Amino acid sequence: MRRNLWISLIFISVLSFGGLAIIFATNNHPALGLDLRGGISVTLEPKPGTDYDSAGLDLAVEQIRSRVDSLGVAEPEIVRQGDAIVVNLPGVKDQDTALRLVQVTGQVYLRPVLQCSAPVTNDSTTTTSSPTGSAPVESTPSTGDVVTGSTAAAASGLINPRSVTSTSSTVPPADSASTSTTAPGAAGTTLPGETTTTVAGGTTTTSTVPASDPTQAQVLPTLDGAQCYVGPAAGTGEVFERDAQATVIPGKGWGVNVNLRDNADGIGVWNQLAAQCYNRTSTCPTGQLAIELDGTIVSYPTVNQPSFDTGGVEISGSFKESEAKNLARVLRSGALPVQLQTQTVQNVSPTLGEDSLRAAIVAGSIGVLLVLLFMLAYYRALGIVVIGGVVVSGALIWSVVALLSRTSGLALSLAGITGIIVSVGVTVDSYVVFFERLKDEVRHGRTIRNSATRGFKATWRTILAADFVSFLAAVVLFILSVGSVRGFALYLGLTTVCDVIVCYFFTRPAVVLLGATGWLDEGDTFGLKNYE
Image (cartoon, rainbow, N blue to C red; front, side):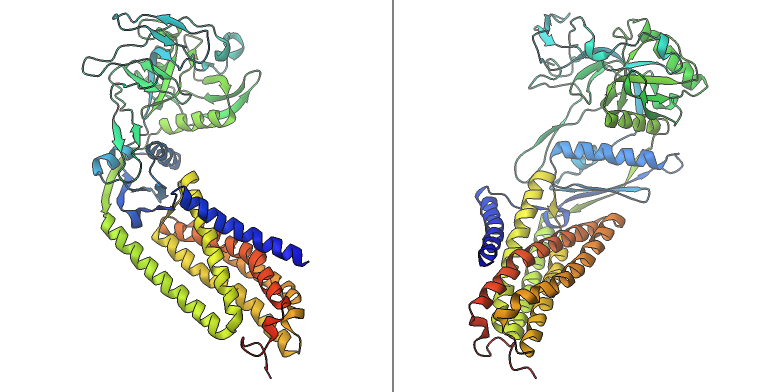
């Protein structure tokens, strides 16, 4: 029994302080949020008088998040508040950078693919020369997926794009105003229309943000890691009805079915593009049609029939379920794109953030100190266990937050610090429940040596119930709230879980082992004897 208690005590100590030592040794620390580090907050809203739907706003949020994540901003906060989108960017100081990151159109463009290349992955690549006489380029063309009429799939002769034997291709030269362009996907590539952004504070991170120009031919990245040279847009996502669905297509796996609008701007535009790609004219020599959203090619299927009817379009290939659902969502949104405009841009200065952090630390330290002094005065010697538990809990929380900051982009905000301070009360409640049970045992003439184990067993369910209520409240707040309240809820829930762990693995063995020495039963120095 005593051996298990020592193992438990050593385990939680090594976990907490060992983790803390590793964090300090690797020079890691929790990333700070916008209100503590400074940065920029941007609020976007749909333009007045424009039609949009909830799906379009959700897609806009994901597009902004994708761009911001590629920049390496620590825990960007991107949330919908009704029809508004709030983007908080900690560490970003330049307003132009922030505005460029959040400018998404939600517009889907249909662009004929002129050439596609991917990183060299095997020995089947070929070497050709650019028609302009530039250096030879190694490339492995990618064919994308296959598009056909959903009512004529059986007769269309679908091609599995992963088994196509393609001829070699070359990468188009950059325009005269741009720097030289190497093979798409190669290291060190510089493409026309790209910009680089540096985030201040910490390691410099460079990110490429493609600038989509639907009126010009340009090189754009694809979701599968390739890059394609596409022509000017010849249509938009508004050719589709808003009924795109990801579905399992018999014999082909996951794909997307979508209907065309029955008018000149719908099926008329689509069939004109389909004829060009199917016949592989000079405007669409590859036979592929790129579906582009905000500078990224979501899919670039091969067109396998020259015309379609309103029965719809079927896009099939080697899709995963998540990829098919993403494409369907893009097509639905493209049928009714949301047009966003910037409502407010607010700068949060680093100085203000430092002042907020300093004030939070001072307030939290005073609060914790007063609580510990009260516990020492009321429970005397057992207050030492409380101090030890708070230290272990603090080390564990710091290690977990630092780890999540590094792996998941979690940032510590002022609301988060508030959640941690409030959780101290939850932790102290656990000690009060346990210690009051011990006082009752002493009142009935028992010693702490004999009642410590039994007292903890009797109070463990009460402690779990109290912590569960706190955790449940944190979960509900996190799900239903937005902004800083979610940060408060997140840290309150995290610290509540840590309290349960520390209570079982530290407080329980510490009190039982101390009680076993008989030291706690000597005299009346700890306030647990001579109660009438």
